Length: 265
Image 1 (cartoon, one colour):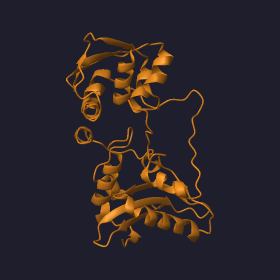
Image 2 (cartoon, rainbow, N blue to C red):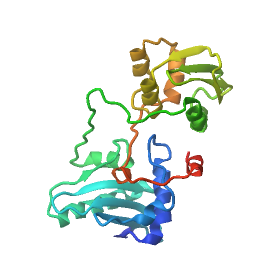
Image 3 (cartoon, rainbow, N blue to C red):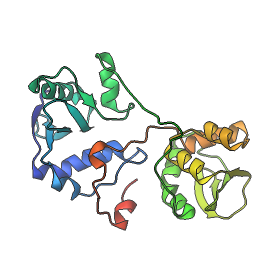
């Protein structure tokens, strides 16, 4: 296929946003962006390029800095894997233009572009600071669980538990919330008794929710024993994953409305 790389234009904002949302809607901790978000791009310190197919549809984008002594790519988005070779070529030109021998790309290791780069001379680095955890604070456990109900039902529907019935009670220092499942349909029941009690600290529950650590690690630390079936269910509801905040989103001070959260799955 033929692709063309060009500079980002203001009228591209909606199409780029659609790619961003499609790429990140299943990734925990990704920033919720509104159509107004990309209207502020590109920043003076950034280069923003898009890639079009032969029908002039935007199928990829990349945001890098304008430094002369390094080639840092802070965000990429793709519509199809077919464009990955072209995207790599476009990013390589950034390094060549600056007479640099390497690129540094900030992205989660399970991203399609990261997997594509396995066949080339690449190095992946993931750092974990000592005694660190997710920089997240729960304010209301019950309302948070209610917000997550839709995603939990989606995960159950695509698992071996789609006909399962049971209940899980999460008791922390800030809340007591039960997940009640009947024939694969999950409901949030604050303060209700359950078949399985999971007494956790707020920090342990937070790490479980965002996928920073898996259920088996959290339960071992909390000294909580569950049956193999319950552990399998917890792995479905709380999969360990690479939650990721793109560098472009850091400290942007996004102005969000309550309805923006309701439209993000």
